[in-house]
Length: 170
Image (cartoon, rainbow, N blue to C red):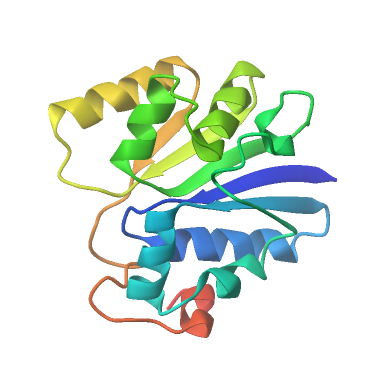
């Protein structure tokens, strides 16, 4: 069984995290561990009209972002990797600079320390120089960073989607 950590932060594009959870739920050999930041909860509600509970039902295990002592905060808890989708620039900066001040950043730090795959899906554009430097710093630590456009297919910032629409990819 492959364990994958999925984190949803306050960046726009919460639909990407929801779609990822849904896709991983369909995979027979994957156990998902979910983290949602307080800003992520707000974005789920604003962008998709979803509650924390609506999203948690797609995860096998749910962690509180404040629980720094959770299993995923330890390198001895083996995971296949971690995806932060969407990844706010705040979370990117904290991960790039090793600030393990909450479970999300601690789990990302452990993922990098153990040389496991970490994918950071940035959503905030345009990028300023600090954002770009943080992306480079994260990449030097072996994280895979990418930025997805803040408009176009997949976003629902201006028109709320139902859970079914978000998962279906429309």
